[in-house]
Figure 1: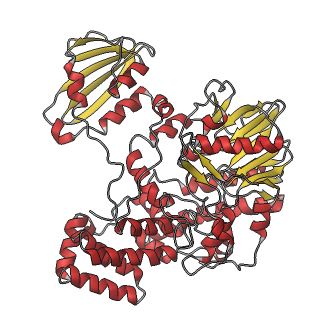
Figure 2: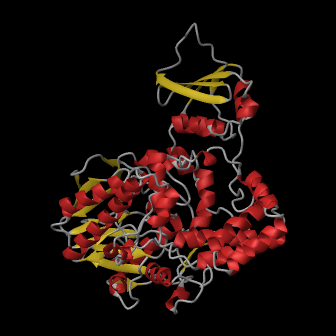
Figure 3: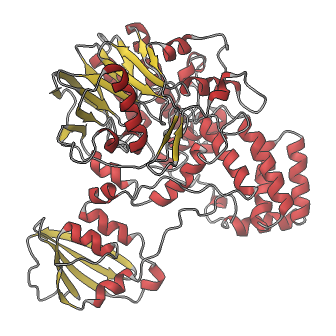
Length: 608
């Protein structure tokens, strides 16, 4: 990708514009003193780019590491650099509206305190979530503590379903891979973690969730909140399943959520997620241009720095629109010519006009993995070549490769030769086979770690760099644990009954449950609804109907429970539940819970 000349400082001027004050002291801690954010950890980025970093990513790291309170325009402020995301504050008649309260309650509280120190002790009169990712709602209790959450909380339709669903089905695996993606356990420094392109990294404080009280259900919907008029645009299925842009007419200010930032974003994140729709992403950006492009004088987002001036805003939105449209359409063009996702990723390049824009660079998403994601969305994992239809799993395949190459020592030697010749990609392939064939082989681990160091330090993409460097760290025996806890009680309370049952279903140890046959009726009195559960053939299925259980000649449940949703949560968590009544075999529930498997939050990634 063509890199802009380093003397282009327009983004730096924007990132510094409106600066009021930095957070000091720069560390944010929990009540027991654990550091969850160090705002000065990236001060090394003030120096010149070293050989251990890509110059363009270093530039992006300098921009996103700026921290403090900034004035966007009169009445609108942002706190940046105190978490992965930004907190935006809009002053109303009686107090202040908080947009996106960061990821942790501790960082959100520090951001609000910084604002109040310089703008006065204004009460929070509304909370607005731009979308359903945790770094945009997790700090809610930092700005609205328990007992103070009687103000309106606005969010796009479907927010709650999507905010909690990621933490059910694949939450453990996604959290583990997020450690790699954000490099949260890497040392901050020129040879280590220098950001992730979208921001610095994730905070590691307390994740909370305050449910919305006002749903935004349609584009064009208007709300007046604490005297502030807001016009909304729903953008579902773009950067998040539930997301929205919105406009403040009195300020001529447009919030683009995470749909138009100063980087190529992800069509599929490396931590894992549902594949996003690049075509719809482009269409919603086009719609935003049509709705707000004529008047907007300021555009700000949930990450990065604002853009001032109507022409520049229109240019940013148009370029971002064309970026996602081009990736989508050209991937489809080439896959219909028979190219696979990997082949398209190697062949495709952006138009020079998009390559020359900093916001088109792949600091967070990348052309390579975005193209593969679009291919996956339409064609799935299989590339059509039957040689790839039934391949051996990684360990079995690795042992065969290594045997064919003459053993682990010989494979390591060949891999070292490729690394010495500069072919790091194939060196990584060979050395990865050596590690999977013999994970205890010290030379294989050390050589692969060295290759990952070189690959990571050459990456323009922040998340690729973090993946490579975290892999190198773990190969050298330093574990990168998952520190973000998504099991906060508020997150659990947000689960619907169906989601609670689904969370059990995905933990059933199928082979152990093959012979089990259990049926249940769970009547939740506070919802006046009965859930009928059936465990058969190792699968737990369910459906629900209004009212208490009805007698049926066909159905004789092993256990009928009458309880409330809080009691159900306690029962499933093993805390017991006073007041629950039952009919039938009380031991049936214990039999069901005994068939559950536990997830492993620290499962291996770069070793078998």
